[in-house]
Amino acid sequence: MLRPPRSMARGRLFALLRVTLFACLFPATSIQAQVGSPAGPVPVAQLEARRRALLDRLGNAVAILPSAEVKSIEGDYPQDSHYREDNDFFYLTGLEAPGSWLVLVARKSGRDQAILYLPASDSTMEKWTGPRLGPGAEARRLTGITGVRPAGKAETEISELVLGAGSPSRTGAVYLSPKPQQGSEFLLGLLLRDGKRNRPTKVEDLDPVIARLRLVKDPDEISRLRRAIEITAEALKESMRVARPGVWEYQLEAVIEYTFRRNGAERVGFPSIVASGPNAVTLHYDENRRQMQAGELVVEDVGAEFGYYSADMTRTVPISGRFTPRQRALYDLVLGTQQAAIDSVRPGTDLAALNRIARTYMRDHSGDLCGSDSCVPYFTHGLSHWLGMDVHDVGSFGAPLEPGMVLTVEPGIYLPSEGVGLRIEDDVLVTSGGHEVLSRAAPRSAEEIEQIMAHRVP
Image (cartoon, rainbow, N blue to C red; front, side, top):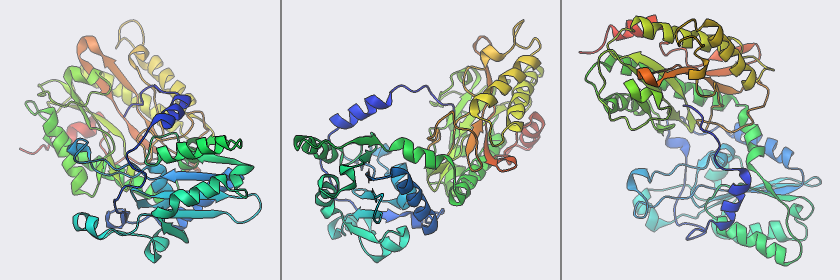
């Protein structure tokens, strides 16, 4: 999926935090780990290593991470009421836990602390939700956090950690995310109260600190990404077996997303893009309401989410089963452009260098496909973005590549005057020796695509 331009500066996000109010601080909801997911729980050793790495970067400080806000089936759209945990909270706890808090206390001298506040069991609510995890031995076992406490104590104890005379925040900082989440009203009030004491707390943005950690994936993250990508590759192959003139875009979308769920994906990583004919020149078209016609191309930009990690792959498919000569020439140019960039993925390079390599290849191999100029002006978006828990994952775009980073490589050509759009996108893991194309199971060459489409279901 293409990365849209950033529309809001981080300063404005902090401003949003200061004005966002929520109806209640600790919603009466229960929690669970992801043990019921096909992905299974995150290994405790990985969770402990992530928290340790974050604490090491904080110095003398307190970091406060609330869980995600619960959507109301009554107040919000019921079609979009499914709970999805905040990525950073899940990254550090492995839990889906509405109404909870993770507090990390880093001390330059003295023992660091990790404290997890979880809502106590609620027998009335559990008649609707079923038995859920509360504070106790099971929570400690799943997270590796020994300091698991009832959420009812969070307000008082967090206040003491921030305002107390011996708090690390008195000589260091409080790290918060600017994202609007449950508890934003409490956190804002806490900081204002500190200012009234003429001891203003230094507030730092937690997001870029965690983003740097999340940029390099650990073995559990790579395992989850592999499975998300495998599922997505299978879905793309299934769609190729179904695509033909007269099929509606939403029918192809249904095949893709059914294959996701059949194979254990909890949800889509982003709204599926199934863009046929002239719709393919709209980069983020996702209405998927058009009937596909003979001789056209369809761009399928899709990704399954598995265990909180998302794939992101694109294939361009000839609806009639074979590319026309012109479509094939354009497709091969995009494929060659992509391969030139993929071949250059290795530790030490960066996304900007890969983008230059791709555009240079396209310029040098365009011939007269796009008129007297090269096709580069019709490659209207960036080549790559990071991939992980977010489909456009966190991390600086200027960071040099390191083993464990995962990125997309997705050149395209878009010709509105012809109603033709083409994009090919693969997911690539940086390794110590170069790279691994994680999405290689999905047919990519024109020959492979035509071959699988030659055996379409009746």
